[in-house]
Amino acid sequence: IFYANWSSLSPFFHRGGIGMRNEESLTNKAMNGLASLALLLLGTSPPAVESFSFPPVVVPSSSSARKEATGSTLGAAPPSATASSSRTDDARAAETESFWGEPRGEREIVDFVSDAVFDGEDGANASDDGERRWVEVISAEPPLLIVHGFLEREYCDQIIDATLGGPPSTDSSGSTSAAAAKHRLRRSTMGAEQEETDHRTSSTAWIREDRCPLPLRTFASRASSLSGLPPGNMENLQVVRYQPGEEFQLHTDHLDSFNEFDCGGRLCTCLVYLNDSEESATKGSSRMTEGGEDATFTGGETEFPEFDAAIPPTKGSALFFWNTLERPGSKGYERDMFLNVDLKLRHAGLPVLSGEKWVANRWIHPRNFGAGVRGL
Image (cartoon, rainbow, N blue to C red; front, side, top):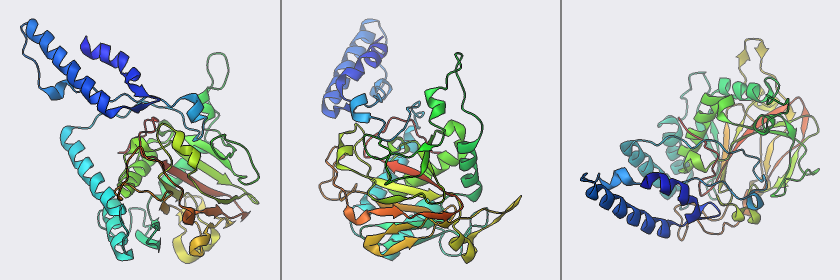
């Protein structure tokens, strides 16, 4: 009874979906005491306190704060992990946060990321599909790196297929459901108001794991290992297609206005290239598919002017960078703090000249996003 009542009332102990941690803790203690007293009066021994720990309530963002700024739909919360695995995950996350919280050298970054994502593999080591796995550091501080072989090539194909595959489902009235409509490619938008603009001319779809479970959960797990932030803090996967002439002009992935979201701003970005540019294919990264060589494209480099870098997309490789001056583990960092844009990480998707370019984005926030993203 106490559990049921708490579950129904607990949303009232949140401000706009952000838990009041101190008040919630006190309320939990009070409810634990009342529950134990009730059981004693019934002649039953109270259970250990851990068994009366109330699960956190994920409260969706308010419509005014959300405004579809991330285009994500809400899903079910992930299942609870065991206590032992939770402690292990917490320790690993704390270690990762500590690592990114201070400036590091290139060799430190290569060793750490190789261990976090590839279990220590680096250099000539290859994944199961023959793709070489290694870490390339564009900038050590602020961190900007390419994790080559981050996602299996077949998973990249499956994500594209899930985006294009089949007509959206309809309800009994024949109308397209909101969730299904999210999976359709639409003109990309920008900012908290989700406006169409000539600044960004690609097409976008948001993919939930029920469309492509193993690739999406693998992506989420590795992005979590890389950042030290849990999958629950991630938006649903955004898949983007660029056709000839389409681009994304110079921009930042975080904006000051994003601090108003219940989940906080976009701390970091993990972007995976889903197909090869002609330049990267020429360097030997392209693989043969059952129907012949993978389709490539020309143009479409990701440009970071601050570092004089124009990165040719390589299928399965991930770009990783922090969007804000504040990072977990850094001095004074708090999950609820205002996040300032790091303008050094401004970047652009240069125009595609021929063919189609495909990418997938995972944006990660300081607090739970509420989309039910899970890892493996």
